[in-house]
Length: 408
Image 1 (tube, rainbow, N blue to C red):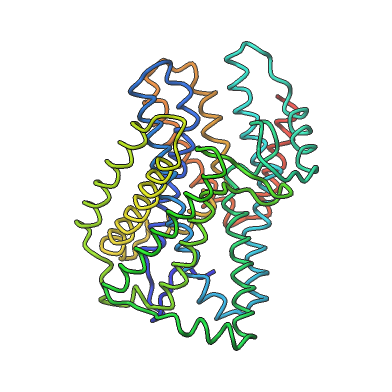
Image 2 (cartoon, helix red, strand yellow):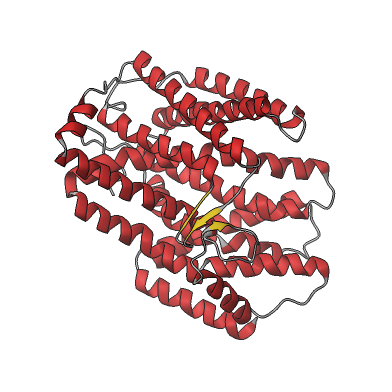
């Protein structure tokens, strides 16, 4: 999938850099999830980790799904529907399968060891644990994820949902080409690139995502609930609405030429101001509304969350377009490895928690060290092993699991 072409076939470098920036927040979120359990009663540390998880959960995926939608349309127009789908199956489906068998179980085992270490219970060996996870995998379960040791795609949920959305998009694209009714209907949707038009579309996006989140949460309890479909697709129902809408927004933005030369995406100062205001409102509501939430309070939180995501998205895109749209060797390397870093990094935060457990320093120092090591090791593995030698990388991953079978 082209990652840096706009409507005039010039590079949009800022999209590459923005993706890497978001991936760094993904790593940070996973570090916060692992080390949030090690605050040892520190209210400050616990609050920091909680806010990291809350904020990253709000703004990361809208940016990534928007970028995916923005580049999906030129890709399918250039290569055709069949090639588009096959390419996505190779790029997303194969890493998902390999990762689910040989990356995710490693991370799950390290997390399991951290949990049982606190109970003083000796952990089972990795081979026995892996076998149980694989037995869970071949049940092709559909429903909620009920246990941390139950098979799930963990961070690879993103690949499963994105692949599903891209295949759905390819089907709609093919239907549009073959159906005069659909083609004529879509042709009547105005493609606006004026400032007022863009902000109107963004406002509609905020309203749709707010209402979608609210409707789903009317039927589900508040908080994260992972759902599996035959153990192949992994998603959170309330967030799925936002992900699909921002993907569609990306497709629309490409067709409307939002990022053609000279067109503004709004003032960075204004985006920053409304983002800070929305952040204050959302944190206040999140901390002050009593549980269990009433229907009205769910509505308030749904709208504050969704518009905070929208404002942060606008601010990040505006900032990146202004300051990160110049190519450089460093940026090129970082951007080229962002996807691979996302796929392979997941076991490292949990492993760091085990290796750094005896280090008698503040948990924020340990977590910061773990973050730096996770990024560094993932970048080295991606740039010098996975990307240049993908088959060797897969073989090394299998060998790693075999070694873990023997020593753990």
